[in-house]
Picture 1: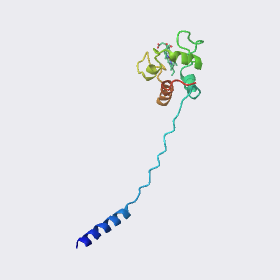
Picture 2: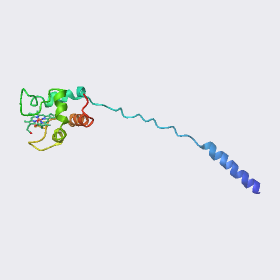
Picture 3: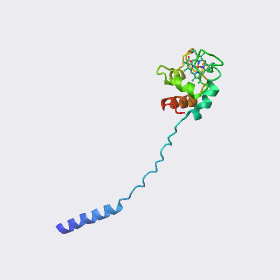
Length: 118
Ligand code: HEC
């Protein structure tokens, strides 16, 4: 009797181990790491900022017509670029008409936060 019970459990073990099916590993495609450069964001600044932010237009505001000028503005830890892009305040937000898409805003901010690579 003892042997029968033992055999029963051995059989059960064999059967249960046979049924074990391996689930296929889900295929995970990693998000591509996008590195924004000045070249990739330049058109946003040219189309939305440079009509005012050019020394030729207005000598009293920061000039954003070249990488050298923008990066030296951003090198100042007191710069307000991200703050103004995110702002809703009428006389503070940039561009003043507020017409910058969220995608463009996000791109500019990501570029600045990633160290404004040329
Ligand atoms: C219609 C003209 C105009 C446009 C377009 C414009 N700005 Fe400005 N911006 C100004 C003026 C005028 C000031 C200075 C007055 C003030 O402080 O608000 C200024 C100030 C700033 C400042 C603070 C530093 C400074 O020069 O005084 C930042 C940063 C800035 N703008 C960023 C931007 C960015 C980024 C864009 C484009 C997304 C942009 N601006 C588009 C007119 C403009």
